[in-house]
Image 1 (cartoon, helix red, strand yellow):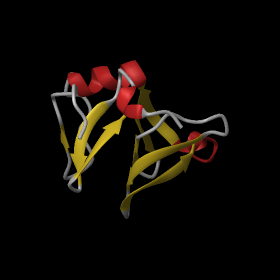
Image 2 (cartoon, rainbow, N blue to C red; image 1 turned 120 degrees about the horizontal axis):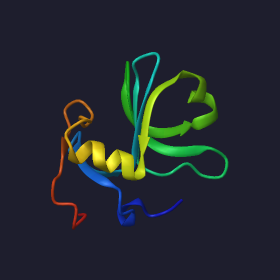
Image 3 (cartoon, helix red, strand yellow; image 1 turned 90 degrees about the horizontal axis):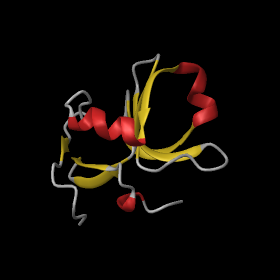
Image 4 (cartoon, rainbow, N blue to C red; image 1 turned 135 degrees about the vertical axis):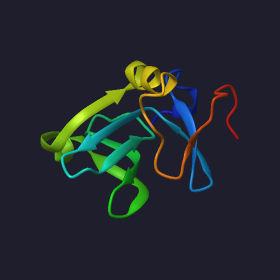
Length: 103
């Protein structure tokens, strides 16, 4: 896994009191939203914050979710959508505008 705090497209947010770097987002046909905290690895897995019936940090499988993805943005497109205000942070979270430091 790469250090996503060094990803130039990463956007930070505070979610449940935890400062986290996000690199992508997608929504499933179930309405669940997935905020990626790492890029997908060679096996198609990534770390993420999943917001659904229960909201939690964990691991997600792209192959498992692929048939149900209704919208998705990662890396540069994700960063642009956050900067333009087109993508809200997870419920109860807040985007951190100063992306220069990570605590």
